[in-house]
Structures are given as C-alpha cells and as structure tokens.
Image: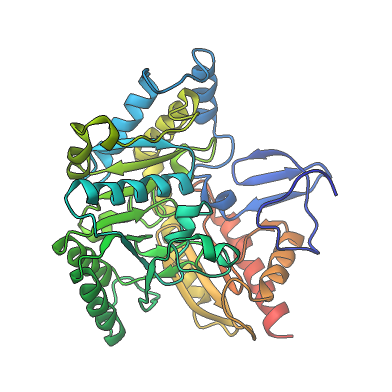
Length: 426
C-alpha cells in the first residue's frame, strides 16, 4: 500500500485503477482500460470531464490572479458569480463562500443558530432533520443528520438533531399517504414547542441516503409549517442543484424559497472544489448592522478563490445556454424511458426517476441500505465491464454528466441487467 489514506474505502477486494486522463464521459487508466463515468464522479461533473470552456476559463483566470485573501479585498469572478447565483436561486439575497458541500452546510447551521439569537429566540436551539439524512462529514454536518453508519464513532461528540421519518416514494407527485400526514403532524408539534432553530433537508431526493424520493406536496407543507413557527429552512442542494432534479434547483419544484441554501458539487462543473451558502434578505438583515461581536465571524483561507469562481461562472453560463438545456432535456427523457424499461424486471424494485437521476434497488438478503454486502459485488461487476457506478449498498443509481449519449446509456442498461442476472438470479 502507498501513503494515501483513501476516502470511503469500503471495497477491500476491488482493484483501484490508476487514472491518467479524463474526457467527456470517459476515464482513462494507465493500463489502457477506460471507464464510463455514469455517476459524474460523485455527482460533480455536470458537462463532462475537461470541458474546453471550463478549461479556458481556468487558464484565463490563472494568468491574471491565482489566490488572494478575500477578507478586505474583492474581485470580479466572486462578485459576478455571487450575483448570478442570487439572481437564479429562489429567494436568495446574499452569497457566502466556503470550500465544499460540508462546509456550506456548516455555514448554514451557524447562520441559522446565530440568526435565531439575533431574532430574540435564544431557546430555539434544536435542528429537525430527515431520517436517513446525510449532510457531510464535518462535525456540524454530521450532527444535523440522522445518526448511523457515517456518524456512530463520533456520537458522543455531536449535538443531536431530531429525525423526522417521511415515507419514500418513486413518484414525487403522488398524493400524500397516512404516513405523510402523521409526519406532518409530528413536525407541526415539534415546531410549535419553540425549541427548533432550523429544519434541514435535501429537497425531494436524498443522495448518500440511498437516492430516496419524497413527495413534493408533503415537503412543501413541511416548509410552510416551519415558516409559520419561525423555524428557518435550510435546503441542502449540494447534490440536487444545477439541474439534477429536472429544474435548475430542487426548490423550484416546491414554489417556495428556503431561508438558506447550500450548493457545491456541480457548482464548478466538477473542475474545482467550491461551496456556497445562499441567504435570504431576512437572514442578512440580522447581521448587516450588528455590532462586531454579533457579526458572522467565519471564513476560509481559500474563500472565493478567483480561479474557482471563474470556472463556476462559466459552468453557470453553459447551463443556461439553449443548446445545453436541450441536451439536458434529452438526457432526462432517455433516463425516463430507461426507468420504464427497468420497472417490473425481476430482481429490481422501486425503480424511480427524476430529471437526471435514475435509481433502483436490487433484491438482496440482509440489511437493506448502505451496508448491504451486494454493493461491492455490483461495483466490481460494473467496473469489470468498464462502467463506473457507486452503489449505496443494494441501491444502484445513474447520475451521469449531461453529455451522456444514448449509446452510453444503453451500455449502462446492459451492465444493470448483467448485475441483476449475476447477483439476483444466481
């Protein structure tokens, strides 16, 4: 073994190819093999790898200014990107820069708790989260999730969020069930205590929690209940942002604006790491004229790195171009057609699709979810066929870059059937 301590190293007996190049939808290894990236390399590559427009933006900015302290200075890439995000995201007024999705969540949690103090609600200290949630690997982000496989070694050191169990669905437009109504009543009662500062969720789709869908109307009513009781709404759109759910942002499905929104992953099209937390005008007003000890004293060394901001700005421009919008719509339709073909196939269950996301569960014995032993086997089978997927236990999903072709999707379909036949029909 080398000197690297690898992240999420749970596939002990699976080879780790050494990659040397990436382009479009494909990763190239030093042994001559290639791999179709069907998950956008952990959901970050929106337009495909090494997109020429993003490379050009990176190179142009690097020739002008690399890194500069953002406390006491500003620069055009950060100002323009912030304005673009505020203009695009529902209800956004200010943009706070950080480094990645987890730090964007940390910023949102700190702002929510601090804002409640500034609002004269010092007893509003608790966080309501969704069952099975995951919001990152830093202390606050872990605390704001339901405690489980990602957090259990650190449980004694975390503040405990209260999980709310919403029923999952394969169709976000389906009508509410009795379980939905029970969850809504539970949330209403919790909010009415005055003890809750914020409600955090990934709108409509949980990512690392298993690509699980929630009903749109139920989530909208949850946000409305939070607002009635002065509970701040945090939308973790680290995965769901930038077109992944069919809208540019998942909040657009709800017709409501959160108080705080967290963005990362696809923000730079996968080129460089960047996180932002968007805040409403109401949040901003509690800090704008505060005395120094009550201001938001938070920052990062690489806050608003000029090169990263320039790349993110170019990625946003790409997303809004008519040709790219048409490309996304074609991918959405192709994924929908694939979901229809897979539904009802033996060995598959709960096949679901939304925008650029297709997910299903393999029939598998044992614990269901991330720890199911079938996950590493499915991963190995797909890699042997030259396709990169990253199963969440017995949940398989496709979340490809928007440049994915019909032929590449057909190849993924073949691999899914190969996995099903090998692992569920043996």
